[in-house]
Image 1 (tube, rainbow, N blue to C red):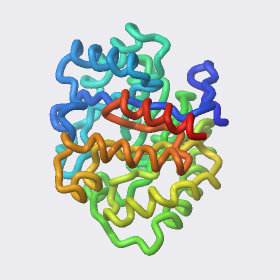
Image 2: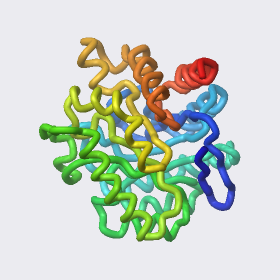
Image 3: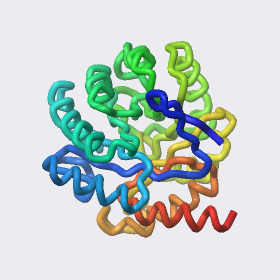
Length: 274
């Protein structure tokens, strides 16, 4: 069992939980995750909470291949009002901010965010880890390669699990030395990895338990699903549920998804099977 200290409240992860995705962006790869207005974001948050979301992940910068990178000020303008409104309406629901920019992390936590979710693992900005440590919130450390510009390139990996273990041993040490107390591991499904790498990762993800940190799985509607099945992201819910179930069997503790109800049902059935 893992515990997270979220601003003084101790959260126990006794069983897997669902993180619902809310994108305050016009260009995230799946249109169903976008919330163009504050009222749309609140409506989406309400629905996700009713369907079983334990955490809501709010982002203002699309990280899909080919997305346009915006500055920190614009990202703050997108996420801060949503975080403030969601925390006011649903104060007991945990909120994470999906950002790799230190100034956005500060503004988001000050607005009420409980967790920082960083696709860069603290590599894109030198002061990201020290910033998160100063905020004293849990940190989601994701595996990615390269820079902001090159993170979606897909070099061949001889052994994706060995690469991830080496990466996270170094990154967890860096997080700990910076002063971050609660670290969640995200293997970065779909980020700079071939389809073969993604499925090898999913198959062997349990090996990452050696890191002794909770594992987050983010496979929702991603290209490794719809490219293999020759469908669209909009048609990828069933494939997502299948891979989420495999992830649960390989020790995922947090499912980051666009579709909360189906992920919560997968967890419920998985728990019954156990």
